Length: 143
Image (cartoon, rainbow, N blue to C red; front, side):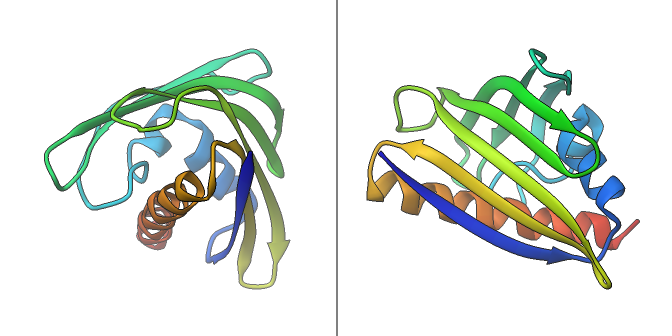
């Protein structure tokens, strides 16, 4: 098993970033690695609550991921399980941890995706999450 960690500085308060990362409406604006749309998003951001996101990528393929919120501490921490339902190459469940820390410019987001199958899986997920966070920054920059 392996993991990846990404750190981003986002020009929005932690409460705004937290809402974008946990609500179905917010998720619909940024989930997925490229400019293609989120087709459906569901989110119940509380411990034991579930989420599910269906999105399309530039190659025309649909991907679906889902999981359970394990920890939700507004506006600073989100921990959730992660599983591909459609389109992802990884079998099994992994774990996502997101920490949001206030900084003078807005929020420092530290994202860790752990329990990935191997280095290749970590590379693919790093590319995907990097694209998604580019979209998150662009979306929050329009607020």
